Length: 159
Image (tube, rainbow, N blue to C red; front, side, top):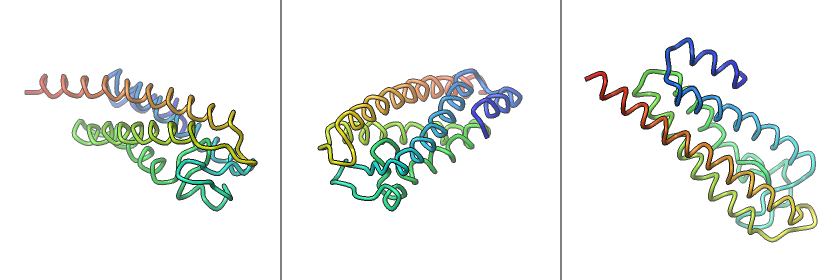
């Protein structure tokens, strides 16, 4: 489902604007990560953070690639987006899930940015990956904080 479809679904459900923004941004980040995974596998840009990667097509599920996250954080992000569409308690878990993925993205992005370049993955790819990852993580962290404030207000208003 596209981020536009999620946003339309969220609007119909009467969700607050902060939660709708988090759903849209998270959906966009997930879609971008899937595209970047395909690009990295095609270009054979394995992850360099934590040791030199060899084969992006064999390692993308467990280590990710030089420009995209591994499968588990992407799966958590997808589940978190779905949870954001639910009631307040479940949406809180989804918000925290997006926050955890964003925090992991900060670590992974910094790791790729400072990793040693290889014949397969040049310095420019690693630096661009780190910079873009940090920007996207910062965006998500800001939206997570706004959604937590909104959910807190919703809870206080329902008492």
